[in-house]
Length: 66
Image 1 (cartoon, helix red, strand yellow):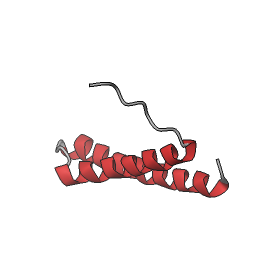
Image 2 (cartoon, rainbow, N blue to C red):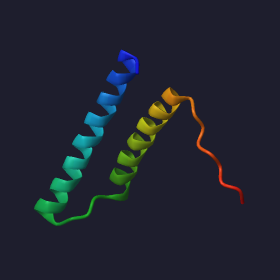
Image 3 (cartoon, rainbow, N blue to C red):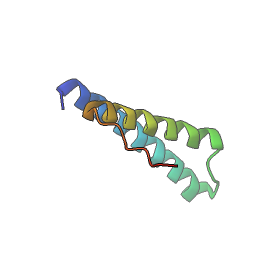
Image 4 (cartoon, one colour):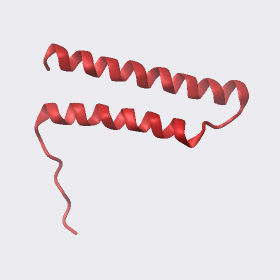
């Protein structure tokens, strides 16, 4: 993995970890579930990370026959 890709992955992971910590802290301290938009934001970041990594491998996932 090139250094710039590695830095991008590390950056994405740090952001995702921080967001998840904040969501967890809200659940633990306040007993409140996160808003749907917050969860969607973290999921979007995870998807972006997945696409970054998937682009690195150059492999396409096999599609299962219908």
